[in-house]
Length: 454
Image 1 (cartoon, one colour):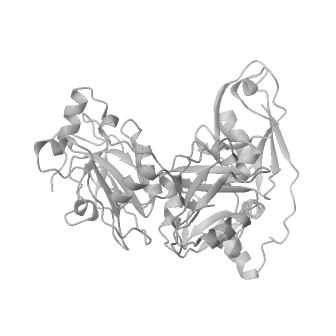
Image 2: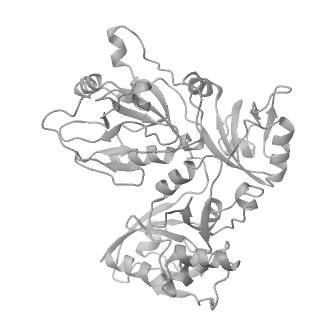
């Protein structure tokens, strides 16, 4: 097995769940999904001539129980790019054609060569049960960089799948579904110009892959129609144009939501950087109950002309993070302390109320709803493993590893706060509550809203 070049060393290591830190300070992938793809990956650059090494290769990596992807992803001093090292003999990566020194250019359809290394690691982790990568031979990569080539131009043109949120108007959603008689899971969407679907970014003549987060590949036309009616006035669609669908299909890559362009979704978190003025930041932070029942930190009384308003803060925004660290599980005073710790400046991540409701909802009629999940529930354990202190990407990977069955330990937001006030470990408190057969915590009382001016 070829090792790293002499004199090289890692500049970073990522001890995330699912990544092992080796003696060489590398990040080793240890995914364990159960629900993957049967089709083998095909390469677009298996030419036998010398030019073949200069073309990107597309590989789909899938793995079974107890397997890893079989490679380490490194960022090395003196070398550019996201470098594949320690390709395990006979492992998934080697079987799919990855080689020591290859550089990853694309993950799940997204160009990553110009991306921070930790973000590339997170994207692969969040992919869970499978990952589609485009790689370039190490020597070809170095030559292209020396010649100042645009590496993105070496990749064959294809469009990422798209997540679209469509809100019905008086005329409907604005698309028709075409399907061959007697064939499951093959649905083509014809979009009416200037309709809700068109405005939401649904390409006309595109293929429908998922409806409200569920795959449609086993749906009949009648089942899909029924699901659309049950969705009420809003649907979220995963779609892809015909040319790109063929591109992924020829490589044996099943398109999933993790690969999608979500830029057309109407709800986005906003990053606000503020420098405190003589009158402060100019907003009031309140702790209140969300419509879902969970407690949150909300912005109010945003004063016109002061730093908060100038940065784009709006009354009703919910606070998600302070200086890049999540505060969703913190109490009011702890959040205030985080904001004050920044001195005379702070960076906040916020989302408006509609966006918060959209991303935290439990889909009607879904397996989650049938199992008893409620909006605002906080996930404490996934399949018996504590995840309270793990990142969103790590928890998502844990869930995707579960295959078709999943066991969650959850607690309502107010219950979470109560456990902490009583000095109970969250997991143990939630388990005790489950044994009592109640979601209510004895002695729990609603707290009055807390406020703090900035």
